[in-house]
Image 1 (tube, rainbow over the protein chains, first blue to last red):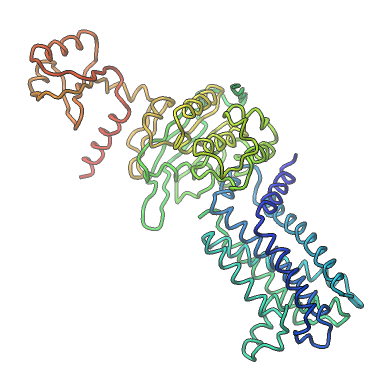
Image 2: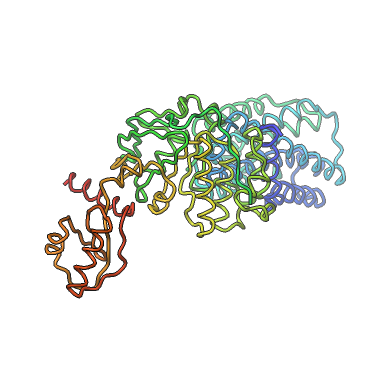
Length: 241
Length: 316
């Protein structure tokens, strides 16, 4: 087997063996989607509960794979010396990063497909969907969240990184317009939340799936975050403790 | 169990495979490695020895490219570990101290992956047999014993079919059977033309496998020579006794220098049969107890102690 495919297989194997991440990648999004689409308590801005929820949950799924899962795994690889040892082989940084990117995309595709199916089963019927925008938003979101995840993973001790990624996940979930619209947040918090990448991604997906016009501000926010976080990850990443 | 056949047509024995010149590595406050120079030859085992914290691992990491030097040059097979990293990596095998395997990784899979990374020069099954882990193929890294982890880690380095092998403490935490196995592999590796650089704080280990010794003490070199030369001037006879010995009288009688540490007496002389018989006669005449008499090459540990003493004295 060639070097790249072998590394890709390793990446997928490690992810598959981290069973506890299944909860994060599938359990939490499915639970949130099914629960809040069945009880009508969310202020969903004129949409049905499920039409409001599914795009947000898809954004959450992107965040869980590209940021939390990738970030935690990479953090532990660094602390176990896996990255250091791979650094003594002909693998090379480019192939390693590419393998991680492809592995993340594969897991994300499966995850999003599953969530779309669960959404449709819960009564979701997307209208006038702009698929191109949806896919572009997911790609941009993946880049941005991977940048955040790897920035933390490249600097923090593995255990601290684990806590930080999970904590950040919760904050970006609550302030991301994913379950509760940002309009419902207190004024000061709202103006902060608007600039977060989770808000931008959920906003873009909601527009794409409901036939709304795309919001330029969200695109810019996500773009700036993507460039900034990938740059910090590249500059500050340390391969070993 | 099979022995590995390792062929390295490209490296001739006795050519310099690793060359370190004026290497300095500074951490925040300290010189981890301070101005070190040495060579390692193809076809021989070079032991880098010294106590914990002497700078062995740091030096090994710089040589294998995972750490940058503050100053000085390192050349591995004529390549710069930083600038020609991938080219160098395809020709070296590295065994780091911390294993570097994900805990959920299975023995067979991890080894196959490393064989793939090095273009399948070796077969994973052969390597597993060589390190006696054939029965652990499906076991995960976290379930392996300390010795098994070391043997797998060595196998990962062998997957490179290396021209230069950097092995950091390969037998630490390994039982006696495992040690013999690892030493055998190290010897075979060198005999096949590989330059093996082996860091260890266990001097007994170095004495058993090394051809050449590089001794570290607080980031500096206190010796850099073949094991044979190191022994050369250090022929000695050691013994234990519970009797109270007059060292001056013994030295005068035997006409050589006599030292005493907590447990042993040491006489520095060529220990031929005549010398031994005069010595034992003197003990018998004086009715002294004579125990654990050894002669010939000294233990590396003793040489090391002396060299440390000399280096500490010259400092103060």
